[in-house]
Image 1 (cartoon, rainbow, N blue to C red):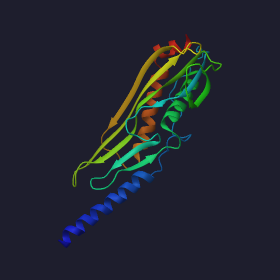
Image 2: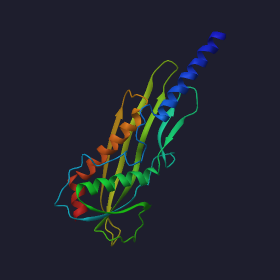
Image 3: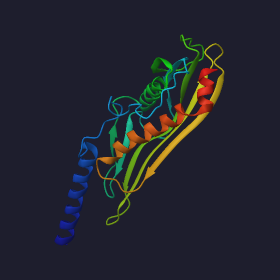
Image 4: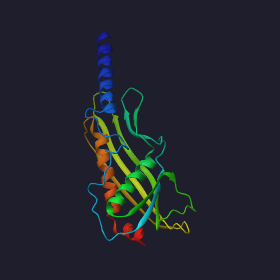
Length: 214
């Protein structure tokens, strides 16, 4: 009996150490949405774009998730632990898209701190907003001796609206998922890379760019 208690205590101690590493980060990964978390480094500038767009906050449509939760760690025999971003996910994702569009060559009116409402008339040719269906990392212990179920994913729908009428001109969805073994510091690092991939997909999408220039 004493031996069983010792094993259980050791198991709990190991989980506590792993959780601390996950939440604190062994290599101090960039925290969403600090300046270092996203930069449009791989976005190719297009000098012919020459258009002004206003970017509003995205709606957070993730089910049963707080607006700032970006990492969930679920131990086998304890309550889930979470990591939160510096600002809401809807605002942070919109900010990344604003920077990506600016890197592409668009002139951006930054309205990412507020939600878009029909009738908003910024000095811009079109309005960009959207919805976040998935954003974050999840690490779950699947059994006492088994490994972890690890998932990092982003799914975002981007909407372009006509400022004069509020009519939606186009809706495009972009997503990226990474699954598999990760070190304790990796989930947020991978999340940053996935966000960069999704923004790059969007600003390089000919159909979206055509709508932004229309």
